Image 1 (cartoon, rainbow, N blue to C red):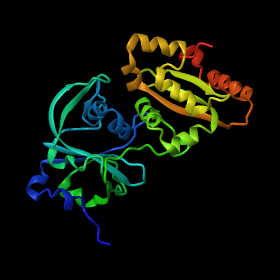
Image 2 (image 1 turned 90 degrees about the horizontal axis):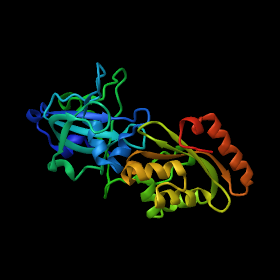
Image 3 (image 1 turned 90 degrees about the vertical axis):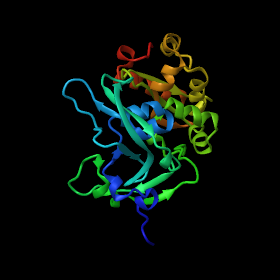
Length: 284
C-alpha cells in the first residue's frame, strides 16, 4: 500500500515551507498536551505557545517562522494527533505560571483536520528536538488515519492508566461511557485527587455498595464529595478552579467481595505514606 505523506493533504508549496515550523508535543512530568487539547483549549494554547519562564529557563517553543504545525503525542507508539496550524502572534504574559506565551491563531485552511488527522512519525536516532522544518522533515510524517469525527479519548485503558482531569471525568460520568462504567462499578479502591496548582493530594476510598463509579460520580455532582477541605476550596475559588486543576487516579483496586475494613486500612496507609494529613487535603 502506497504511503500517504502529510503534504499530500496539506499541499504546502516549496516556497511556502520556509514560513512554517512543525512542532511535536509530548507529555512532560504531570502535563499532557493531549489532555489540554481535549479538555482545556486555552491551557493547550498556552502550553504549545510557551516562550520562556523566569530567569534563564528556556521553554519548549521558539517562534522563528510565521506558522506552526502542531501535533501532540497520540495513544499509540510513534503516532501523533494533529491539533491545528497556527499563526504566531505577539508575546503576552502567561495565565498559568510565570512566563510568556505567543498568541496563536488557528488557520481555517487546515482546521477541518484538527483532532481528526493522525500521523506516523518516528524520531530519527540521535534527534531529540521537538521542532522540525518542513523543507527537510515534512516527508517523515505519513498519514496513519483520518477520523470521521474529532478524537475523544474516552475509552477505558486499564485501572493502572487512569489519570483523569476533572472535565474528562465529568464527561465520562455524564455520558455513562460503557467501558468506564463497567470497570469502575465493579471495584472498590483507594484513589488520589491531585491539585495541579500546588501538588496537594487528597486520598479517598470507595467501599460498601458505593464502588469507584458511584464515589466519583458524587465528585462530579458536588465538586467536593463531602470532604471538608475540598468544600472550602469550592467556596473560596469556585467550580472553575476544580474543573481546571483537579485530576483523579487510582492507587489500589479491590474486588467487590473484599471486606470494607481492608479498604479503610489501605486508605489510612496511603495517607501516612503520602503525608496528606499534614501536607495535603485530608483532615483525618
